Length: 274
Length: 334
Image (tube, rainbow over all chains, first blue to last red; front, top):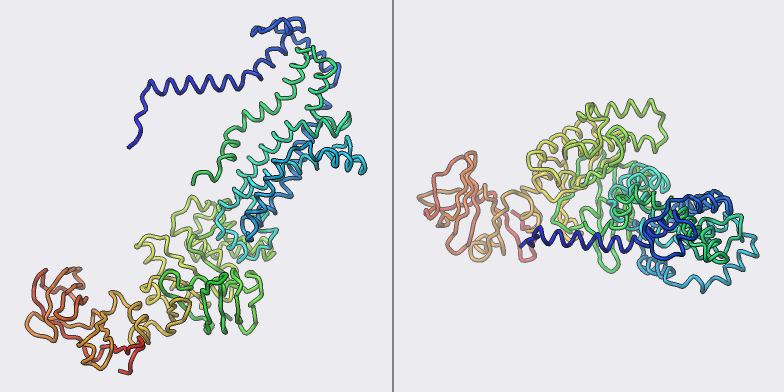
């Protein structure tokens, strides 16, 4: 029997959802509000109405050069995502369409590496980066970001590929397609929605990654995470500037996420319901 | 050319043997149907020929060339799948052109061959559509189109009509048979529907639990089934199997008589029976009758027979069409 949903229940549920959503969003909202305050206003205590000054933004840009960091963030997140897809598409293909007895174990092992605290490998990785001259290099960080997000990318693509009927790939094989032609002409175009949402999620993860991007860079390859962090330590009391820097760092990804939310939700729930 | 030979071919998945050991020869231009119940290994056998599954043993040859270890594309075979297996992101024209593109043909040749295939299969007006915009029958025609442009040495069909409704299945059956007459290329067709097998095949291979029970023309299988399995599987409605005293009278463990070979009378006959369900189709009458000491017998009579539920009738089997089987299930000499 279907559950009866009364209007009253709906109203309560909607109100509760809004309250929870606002609570979750509030830190971001307050950061944005604070960024439009003067430093004096910002330290005066809780206040939701800013004076509306852009003073902090102009100072942040003048002091640190936002666009250099922004450019690095774009390059690192997009670059690491492309690299991850190049590695993950063939990996997910073999796991989805040519599985062995150990495929499930390998997938679990890959995912388990995400559970390891990053700091546990900080020392060896720092030394490797130093000795190979990759410290503060964009390419080094791109590889690092690719590697840390690879398990999630492989998992997501694997889930997508499993939904593609094997007979279509067999048909391609009968039609004379080589393995690469099968991946390029048949599998990839069919998995475009899945690849797109995987790409979006990976860009967001790479954009927000702060542990390695701060520790393996100084100036040259530093992205927006390092930009925010540069405002938090020596000048910790300058809340308005820190808020402006944070707003500038999260704004691009927030806008991208807003426009692609439908794709993202589809990607994250794909395969959950047949 | 399209001679296909299987010698001692076997297939196992782990410890499960699907096909124990098969020898089979398919001649060039033949329409061969693999038929059998679900799980009998007929699709696996087709996939072994296609190269989509590796054999566990034995040799598969096409036109005298050993292709056992060769990739599917190199065997010069084309396959039509049950689910059509069309590329959903490509138009009909691109679907049909795909194997030609993979073969590296030039664009002018591709265009010509696609147009020719579309004309043969009545798809000319649908070339720019995507598979999702087509009906089931049209999709199956595209799948066939994709197969014929390659000019393969043999076509493999894996239950291609199973997803279609009954009416469309009948039409497509005729179209595939017609196509075989036009192209004169070897066709290997898998189905569990014995009506499809009987109407389309030059040669039927009846499979059961991975073994070939009998190979022969539809009429050979109908008239002289080698064993109980083939006798029961070929023919619709099924052959009546009778054991006990009536069979012993004919010196057999089991006797089989097809429903159309039982004469019915309201006055006299060998077996007295009571009509259970009577199906009056106009052209035929199907009767399910309860026969004293024998059990239920199905009878198919030409035209209209005016009997109804509960009526007493007398049945007489046509002795010349009676099949006798021994205790091992094998047919005894007539």
